[in-house]
Amino acid sequence: MKIAADLHTHTIASTHAFSTILENSFSAQQAGLTAIAITDHAPMIEDSPHIWHFNNLEVIPRILNNVIIIRGIEANIIDFDGNIDVPEYLHKSMEWVIASMHGPCITPGSIEDNTKGYIEIAKNPLIDLIGHPTTNEYVWDYEKGLKYIKEYGKFVEINESSIISRRGALENTVRMLRLCKKYEVPVIVNTDSHFCQRIGLTPVSFKIIEETDFPVDLIVNLEWERLKEHILSKHPDALK
Image (cartoon, rainbow, N blue to C red; front, side):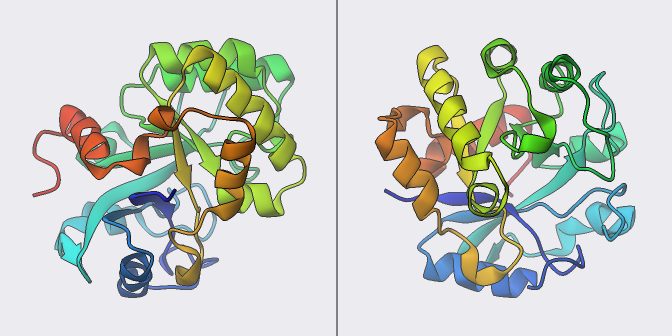
């Protein structure tokens, strides 16, 4: 089992990452992927690219190294009321939008605060994916929040990098997957790659998926056509 598209990848435009778009696309080709999303950090992360970077993503060829390039961004959730750090006009021009909680942008709140934050962000029509929601820094009520995430048609991320490197993320991922299975909440499996050679490689995530007997039909990015249908339903002019 492997993903068809890695929808959370970073380039040297976010300077704590170490690869170019060309290097990422080559690694994606080597991993047998159909597509990758370029999702560098939005402005409130200190080393994020300038906003013009995202305005100019259209200069990148649609296909590099036989891999489809999806124009995206990892937005920062900046409060518990559903707000993010990118203007609406820019999000509307993006083809894939992740919303994540990061320490420099939002101070962790109580379980109730964090849960409210994810629920409110789920209501934002510009968002596609809730990024790395299994870290110990932002503990939330999965049972309560996932119902809203499903209701508003969002996906939650199974984040390979978090599982490997963040304390508590493995246990939290298991807990979240079991509830996603119970409530039939669709997920996206990503690498959150900050170096090209990790793109497309999610063995730990799929080990957990197998151990929890998680239904493969709830993993959206196993099939490119299914993912493409979602993108085009929100952005009819995308992927041209």
